[in-house]
Length: 303
Image (cartoon, rainbow, N blue to C red; front, side, top):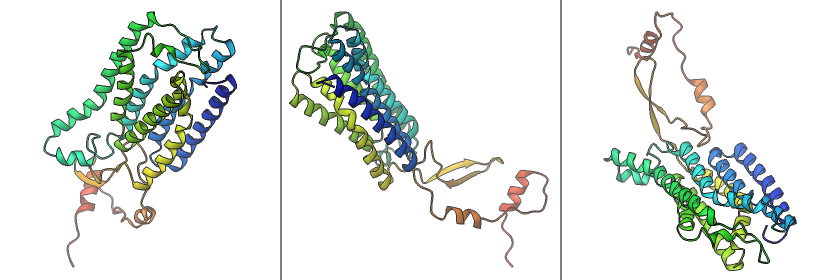
């Protein structure tokens, strides 16, 4: 952490333990647990900054741990874009709307091509910005001095030296555009946490604001846990109401919604009763499975 080696070790240990507990709670009690667990993994990556910061305090800035802190720090946009891609993979079928949400799709119902284009742009823009950011950082690394001491707290000096200007701008651009790959509700939560912690760290610590900003994510797991339960209570994001399924005989049937890639909503309370009450197939033998299906689907004549 910014102030002492002991606080850095404590923050790393307590934060990691809480992340594991939160991930377990999400998996056990939240139906859409994948989004929350992916976010917890992203918070854990940011928490790893406490390891090199603790070692910088121990070595008094005379080791190579500053380079490790630099690597973890500049890779944070990569972690967020990977987080967005993972969330997009598990949620883009949630409402059968190319991941754009039902309100947007109401206005694009007659433009399926535009829907697909916007769906591609959701990941293409963050990935493109990330590539530009990576190139800018690679070009600036030879000019960097990996220095973290000089204040009462640790400082990430490279952002004021070699990475000022385009690399710093692209750092924020890549991290912020990564939120476009998330459901809007989750994107709003992430951006709120980001902006709030950035403002607080900048106001309280003029010299070590960057290090303090990294430390503040140690409690972001609590926000993720609370919002996961809130979204589940609200039924967000929603599943599609129906989905066409092609049977083995080539017939198309409209069935109940199928979970895209995760457990979105709890099953109906009478699911077990309805399955028990469903009629059974006729017991008379038939020559082909499709014939059985057609015979079963033919209504009996009225008596």
